[in-house]
Length: 404
Image 1 (tube, rainbow, N blue to C red):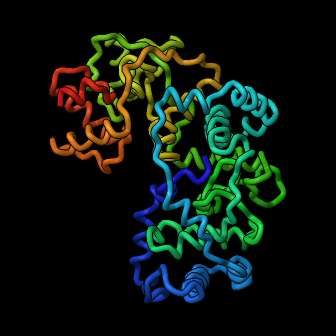
Image 2 (cartoon, helix red, strand yellow; image 1 turned 90 degrees about the horizontal axis):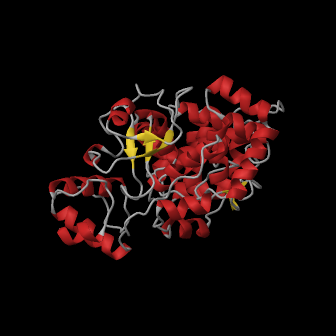
């Protein structure tokens, strides 16, 4: 999944902080002119000034920027990002394969001591870490072949989102300073993510952990560093030790579906009282807030999502990706394959755009009219389904489109 983002997960979490830095008087003194575009040499001089102001030594700055260039392939990838159109059943079937499960379980055995330390220190179980490891790079097999320094120079110089990428370029210099990155040779994703779990330089600086005792953080080749760094990062996203993240359930036909969806108002115990039944029989977390998540409507797979599911949404904003990653982690922890059910056919991309236009005309905020069943569109669908007396499961169908 390298290079998957239109807004990186770190950028989404830190954009306001970054913007406040750019707006501060100290930054204004260092950068009196626009912090993007124009002559590359002049732009890099501005970056040098900012790096010096942050205490990065000249040797690291010059080593990091020597030979820096604009990579037009990065710009092409940034401009040409595809949209996510697969259903949960399609995507999860492809990503949660038996081969990946077998490799993941072997990795959990091979690095059992490291995983035990990760859980002891940060509260994150091996299955959660391993699922991200698999989803991001196939356990390090596909890490990206873009020069990381040039990718971040390109995206920082480009005026689309410099406030998101320029801090990553500064953090890359800190990695050079620490001896953790060779700017001439390091490769990764087009958007600057590095290593086997695809982390950005700022996150590596903040959460990087030396797991093999060599004095460095190397997320490209050191599995020990990968495991402990990922655990520390996941903890920072809000993971709570000892609590579940997702649980497959069966649901009754008369469930109040208007209460389903992320951010729902009920506890797990209240859902159980309404007839929701965990497939694993575990009802011990009834006190926790919980949501019923129906990625393909009430006739498809059904899950109970707990507060820890929020870390998946922090890692990646795609609902289908996050639900698949969370399900993957349960499989690694011993859960059976989900019951796929018999979901109603969804809409084509063009039909979805028509539906979004109708929802927007009714006053709903669905975001961009892109033919994607995203979070805003799901919420709007639920509201209209409830208004029309239909089961409000958030799934876009021809029946709803016709009713509107």
